[in-house]
Length: 128
Image 1 (tube, rainbow, N blue to C red):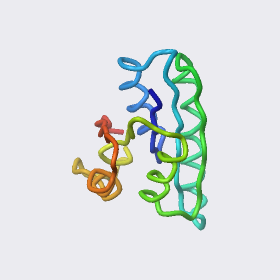
Image 2: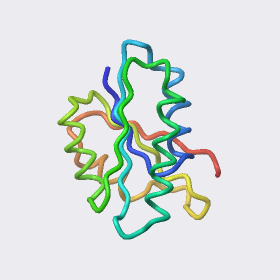
Image 3: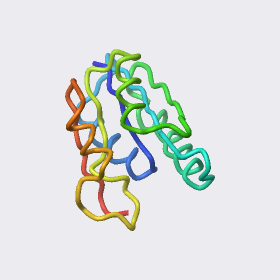
């Protein structure tokens, strides 16, 4: 199975890695993508930190690729990447795991659920 992981924060990456600990094996691969605004240095830093966590936490998987994309629309980027890597499933958090977020599903997650043609798994993020 090839998992596409969408992340924006270390908390999101950690929650998704916790989910994959129970499910993924060395036969599985993952592509981890973070999309950040080009003009927001803090968001880019947070996204890069989120990506740095993935290879360590997902070391038991066969292959883990990470990619930081800037200045792009997150939903479209994730859908295009899913096609490019032939993903079987998209994993995303209900929200980005930042302290100021509510417990509701975020707009990126909602739009992925509405438009994706492959399974989207929404992983809860514990309070930051």
